[in-house]
Length: 397
Image 1 (cartoon, one colour):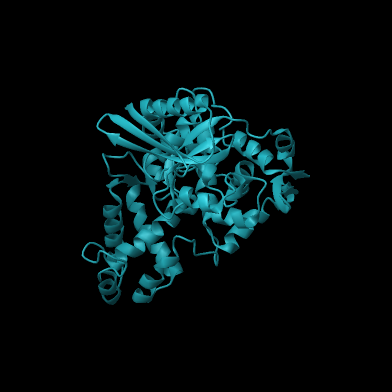
Image 2 (cartoon, rainbow, N blue to C red):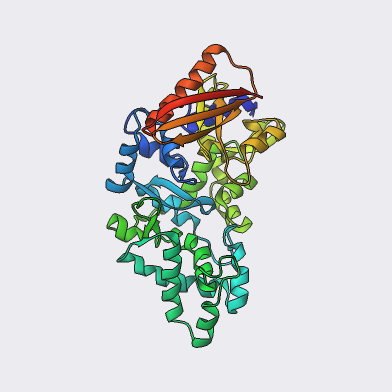
């Protein structure tokens, strides 16, 4: 089977629930497609606003913090991610590495601390996991306090010689505020999250809070025997047709771990030709791909790091490499203006008291009606944030 990029866009829009909004109450379904990143803070809310009819900030906060139907924890790529609590096995346990599969991309930098301590990754991780048991009965406010608290607990069990090294100033920056031990713990919090030992609790102002799954939900995570296959299937449904390299990027895992997870579903996949390259899709999704349209002309204002934008094959949604650099930056990504699944511009919002200024830059011609629709979308987003749209500026590149 061979398909064009427009058909791939149509398929992915539907998989990401961006072809049309889900009815009210669809928050868990939307978040469960492939998880929603919450970096920068609030990104998950914007993502679900674009996917669920009648979505409100108050409702989302209730689902996450009161009903606990959704959960926030470090997951794929080591980012804070929001996903259905009942699928924690897929978004956490499936990411646990087997012996020899470390490091993840976000733990590679721990080497400096390990060399200083004269310890290996495999020696230190169990110590930090044991210390994280503290969170079964406690909640810690702020990431810095979490690092310090767990580092103190680990240090209590070290020999005097190791403890002195553990308490040396950090070589990673801010040595007046962080020790070597605190830095090492910071690297290892993600692997601890995969064991459900660290999750996000209720946010207090600008500070996140941390506890364990057990303490937050009131029970241990339900076992998911098919968790690893489940994670690979979610990737292929949302980003297919795709390949192993893109899957590894999305996971943030080592090549060895990514290969194992990919091969867990390889018997369920079929090759698909996309723009002259061989990609893979779940066989059960072939019909949906064949039926996919070209994405239509629907306009959307996606927030930074929306799941739809977390793809390696960026040419599917934006062909020009120079324009890609305006959308995917090293830091501080803008939002993306979408038309039929294609990125046709970027946008940013600036809050001034209870008002919002929206600035959009587009590189494709738009009709007056389309320009008016973009302003309507900016107004809807402002209302979602309980703000009033003061101004919407549209620049044409």
